[in-house]
Every structure is written in structure tokens, then in C-alpha cells.
Amino acid sequence: MNAARSLPLVLMLLAAAGCRTVPAATKVPASPSPPDALAPLVQPGAPGQPTRAIDVAHATDLSRVSFTPADVEFMQGMIGHHAQAVEMVELLKTRTRRDDMKMLGLSIEVSQVDEIRMMQHWLEARGQGVPDEHAHHQHDAALMPGMLTPEAMARLAAASGAAFDRLFLEGMMSHHEGALVMVHDLFASPGAGQDSEIFAFASDVEADQKMEIDRMGAMLKELPQ
Image 1 (cartoon, rainbow, N blue to C red):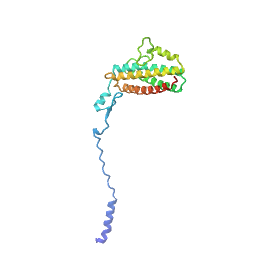
Image 2: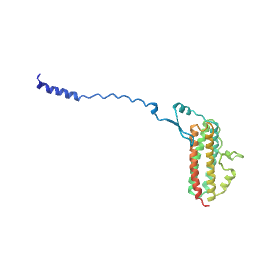
Image 3: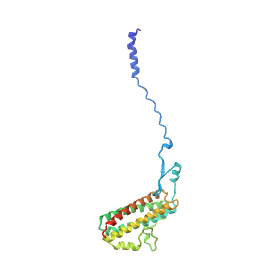
Image 4: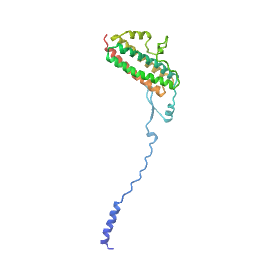
């Protein structure tokens, strides 16, 4: 075959070779991220304290943290504490004329009724005694920090209008400050406040009560002298 006749054949063969599908390159699976590239595990600190990094073994141990007697006492005491706040709000419904006071009362009632149910369930689930919500009405009952005495509750119940508003705000601010004392005492107790539910609840109490104290302080300044 001469060169002139063979040239078209060569060109056809080259074109056919160029049209063949080239196999896709085999993908190499990505290697797993090294341990030090993973997001760090952190343990939240107590209110006002920083978080700290922990390893997997420590995190596993924390998941099995048990409750302490101080945790139980905190939950039991806070049930009565919350219950009295709800009783104060019940008085507010019929004695104030201010819409902002009624909105404040509704906010306190909704949150604290729900938290009472949570605390009762927490105690029941751990086989601990669940106190009666109204045990603080018993003669010579021990009152938690900030709770109003029977005499103070009687004065509140006898007031109305602006006089009631002032007594309510002053009394509820003191009541909330008592809850902050209870949270402080809990976290100051060795080993207490480490149960995840206890920690979350106590932290929420501290944040919410501080916010409401500021709100009530501003409302108190607006009342007529």
C-alpha cells in the first residue's frame, strides 16, 4: 500500500481512538479527620465561671453524674418558693388596675407553674420526697430565702390599687432575690448542681430572676409616690 492510499486510513484510526471514552479516575476516599481537627468538647461552668475543655473520657463520666442531697433540698425548697410566687400573682389579678402589672404576673405564673411540675417530676423520677406545694402555710413552717411571712402576705391581700402594686413589686423583688440566694448556695455546695437538669434549671432561674428584678425595679420607679 503506497503512502497516498494509507494516509486516510491512518487518520481514520486516529480519530476513532480519540472518540473513545476515557475511564473516570478512581476516587480515593478522604481520610478521616485527625482527632485534633474535631470540635473540642467543653463543659459549661457554673454561673459566672468560664467553660473548660474536656476529653471524651471525662465527658462520658459527666453523663453519669448523680444528684446530691443538696440538689434534692434545692428542688424541694424551690417548689414552695415558686408556689408562693404563684399565690402572689393570684392576688394581683384582682387588685391591680395596671395592664403592665397583669402582664408581669402572667409571665411569672406561666414560668413558675411549669417549673413546679418539672421539679416534682425530677424528684419523683429519683425516688425523692415531693413536698406539698402549700406546706409553707403550716404553722411554724420554715420559709425559703425571700419568701413573704404570713403577716406580709396578709398585708398584700388587704391592699389594692397603687398601694397593692408597690407592695407586690417590693415583695416579689425580695422573693426573686431569695431565689438567687438559693441558686448561689446550691452551686457553693461541693458536688451539687452537676446533674444536667439541675444545672440547666438553676442557671435559668438565675438569669430569669435577675431580668425580672430589673424589670420590677423600673416599674416601681414609675409608681406614684
